[in-house]
Amino acid sequence: MVPDAIKKFIAVFEKLPSIGPRQAMRLAFRLIQGGRASIEEISSSVANLKNVKVCPRCFFVYEGADPMCALCADATRQHDIFMIIEKETDLMTIERTGKYRGLYCVIGDLVRSGVLEPWQKMRLGVLKKIIEELPEKKAGEIIIALNPTTYGDLTASLIVKELKDSAQTISRLGRGIPTGGEIEFADDETLSHSLQRRG
Amino acid sequence: MVPDAIKKFIAVFEKLPSIGPRQAMRLAFRLIQGGRASIEEISSSVANLKNVKVCPRCFFVYEGADPMCALCADATRQHDIFMIIEKETDLMTIERTGKYRGLYCVIGDLVRSGVLEPWQKMRLGVLKKIIEELPEKKAGEIIIALNPTTYGDLTASLIVKELKDSAQTISRLGRGIPTGGEIEFADDETLSHSLQRRG
Image (cartoon, rainbow over all chains, first blue to last red; front, side, top):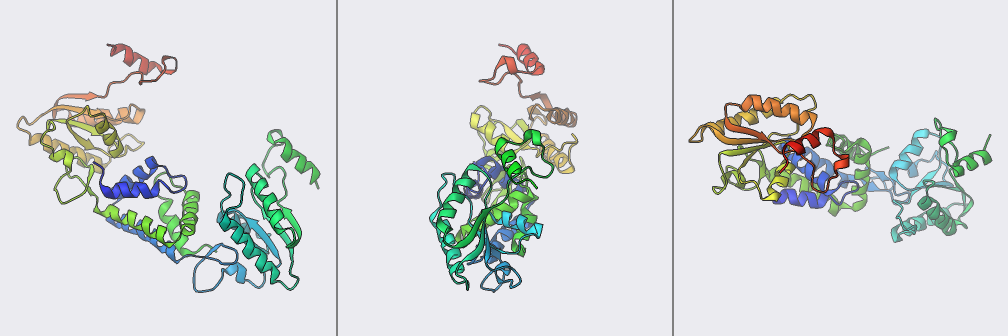
């Protein structure tokens, strides 16, 4: 009873992150009711993502003919400090603070099992190679900016093992009570960290 | 810093039902990491929705060269009984029971304010015209199968007003305790209905 085009649409969209079969179906009906022009607009907004490149150095996204992204190519940034982050959106959030002037390595979504995927090891390999090409052959600092969760902590310890010879210092983001947060609701570990790092 | 193609993608996708700007952004990054072939597949699965038609009689979707959908064209169904439903997915759920052999009218998403949109009035107008073309010029029954919520009830009463001369009977779906439900957690109105309609 359901047209093939809708079945195909659902099969493709239900595999995407946080879209299930029900939402995919509702989306299909909404798009059809929206009409041909809106379907065309959405379809081409997807197709245009083919023009987006992934930087071969930091694995963030960029557009244009350059061999690397604008962050990696920016000579005013510190080229011996690297921040390892999970998601592109994390990078954007860090950049918004304007407080970090080093480079990045986007490691990609952590898997639940707490191991590094082959392509994540490959990305760390690229980072190592970039560091080896520095005049000092060592990074001044590598900041592991993964979420302070069980999986983040587990993965961070794997990355430390992998990169321990590549940097003078390997650090993680400071933990403590977030601005606007309440001491009453902070967990013990957060409170311990915020006591240790008081100042 | 974010490529234009991603900005455009987010602008288009964040307007879709239950997709916000954050999910749209995450979706964009996931698609890019997925590579060109998967982007192509998704883009064409959207574009192919252009082949889906909306039935000019019941406003359900269909494919192919016929002037109406297979349900409306099915001579074995009862052509003087109509069910008014909100969503295409509701129609599919009803059809799955195999217990209904009449025709449909998809009225479309109810708006919160509890009024009928102009295009919803148009759909009721089409239904009225179909009924006037019946030999009896009146439907045997119109079943208003809207969700038993405040907005559903409000809209149902508007529809009754609109169609009161078009049918011998106008009914709504029976209310009561759902299979697997518990009396303890049923609200008063549901319980009252299930007492009245006991049997």
